[in-house]
Length: 134
Length: 174
Image (cartoon, rainbow over all chains, first blue to last red; front, side, top):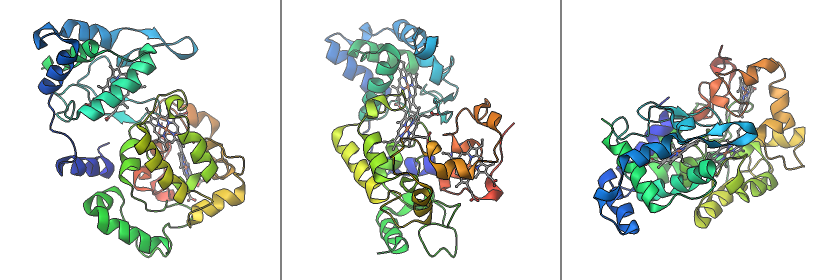
């Protein structure tokens, strides 16, 4: 479903509107906020965050994988059933290239799933896990 | 200024983006093609922020008061968190208000209002206009797995993202 709209967004990105972040600079960004080196980030903890089930609406449970699927290299679905491009940079190089976008979705989705915001450590772990997926 | 002129203004301003985002049906006098084509509108923040979870619903499908209610509580948006920074939120609201069913000049907007939407519904799918247009769609189709929700216009309208809702491009999936 890469429709003209998505192409338009690509056009926007490629005209240089988006910041030139990479998964590596974002890991450094989050690590710095925790006051620890990047090497202290844990891909294993990132995967746990991704897969942990939490109480959702109407007796269901919810996790990051509910929308992004068990395999983050696969496309997911929103609650309105629209396609979500894969979250892993290996399958979608657009991911983790714009800190403002990344922070916006962490805020929304952590509130949605965990009922609270994620801290810098969790965000760093999450990016660390996704970016080492081949 | 009519929609076409305004549309051209915006088109030149945002160039490639709008051309890619909306194909131009030929021979349309108003900004829309009547009952089955949405007004052609471009607005960067709206297209960027309101199309990630569903398609960017045309502002002409709800009155101004609906958009004000909806944009006032994005942190609980039909159960999802769709919150935005205040500047972006205000910018999108201005755009939605200016093109709302009871403000803009689209034929669709006029129809939505004529059918009655004074109570400022939060859902397009709750308007009498929507219900009327879909009275022949079997009830079970809405909850089919391939559709998921009536709000998932693109499941049945293959050119919904281009604003086209005519008979030739609609098919209820199995």
